[in-house]
Image 1 (cartoon, rainbow, N blue to C red):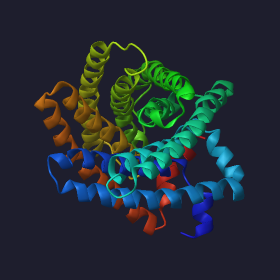
Image 2: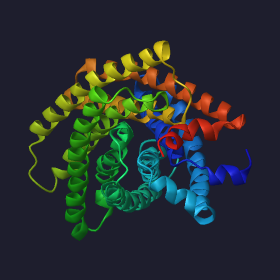
Image 3: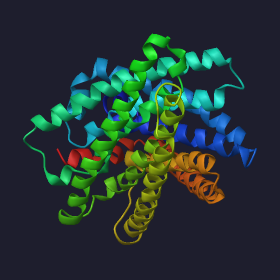
Length: 359
C-alpha cells in the first residue's frame, strides 16, 4: 500500500491501537509487582506505543490537510465518526503511560509536565467531539437502528477517562485553578457516565429487536467494558485527589465503584459468549474493530487491580491478573492480524468494509 493510498484511506479507528497498546503497558506495570518480568514488557510497550502514536498522528493530520473531503465524509458517517475520539483518548492513555512507567527513567517534573500537556490537548479535542458528534448525529435524517452499535460508547469513554489523568496532574496547576479543574473532572465523569447509561439502553434495544451485529462490528460488543473499567479507575482517582479539597463520601464512592465493577462481569461473560458464537456459527473477519477487544478489557483489568488495593481483597487481584493474560493474548493476536493485513495491502477493505456497507 502506497503512502498516498494509506493517507487517503486512513481510518479514524487506527488510534484504538494506541489505546490498546497503552492500556496493556499500564496493566503490565501494575502486575509487575506480582511478576517482575512484566516491568520489561511495560517498558517495551510504552516505547513502541510512543513511536506508534507519533506515526499515526502524522497520517491523521496529513489526511485532514491533503484529503479533507475523505476525513469529513468519515466524520459525518454514523459508524465511522464514533471512532474519531480514539485520537484524543490516545493522548490521555499515553499520558498515563508516562505517569505509570516513565518516572524511573525520566525526571518527575518532565513526566508530570508532559502528561499535563497531553491531558490539556486530549481534553480540548475530546470536548470538541463531545459536542460535534451529537450535533452531527441529531441533525442527520438518514440514521437507522442498524447503525447503532457499541462504538457509540467511545465518545462517553473519552469523557470518562479524562479525570483519570486530570486527577493525577491536578497539583501541577496553580491553587487558584485547582477548584475549576476539579469541577471539570466531575463534569466529564458525570457526562460520560450518564451518556453511557442512555446509549446502553438504546444499544440493548437494537440487539434484541433489530438483529445481530454484522461480523465486522462484533468486537465492539467488548466496548461495554470500557466505560465500566475506565469509570471505576477515574472514580477512585478523583476520590483520592478530591478528599484534600472537598468533603467526599469516600466509603460510598468506593462501594459504588465495586458495584459498577461487578456489573462488568456480566458484560465480560456476554462478550466472550458472543465472540465464540460468531467464531463457530457466523464469522469473525479481521477489521480495525478488532482493537475493540483490547482497550475495554484492559480498562477492566486496571480497575480490578485498583479495587484490590482499595479493599485489600486478593480475589479482585487474581481476577484482574487472570484477565491480564487474556488481554495479552488478544493483543498479540490483534497486533499480528493488523500487521498481516497491512502488509498484504488488503487493510483498507477490511477496516472500512462495514462503513462502506452502511453509507
